[in-house]
Image (tube, rainbow, N blue to C red; front, side):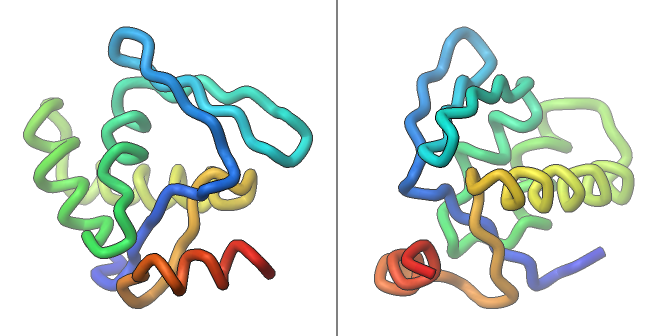
Length: 106
């Protein structure tokens, strides 16, 4: 389990919550993604300063009956997939607003 993975929402997206799912449109390619309830919890908590393991423990494991290690593995894979699509940003250190801007400018 990666204890030092931080996630932040990209500013290059548009999002709207419908029920317990989130619709996210990536600016690049105008691709639309529908996030299931678990992915929505992760996305909403992705503030750049809360470690992923805390998001999993506080948000996902407390909401769903799931093994913590399995939930963490799934969350890491999901975060990496969303980062590949430009929806999330990943870092080994907490990210502040200025760092997020610089990371997205690359």
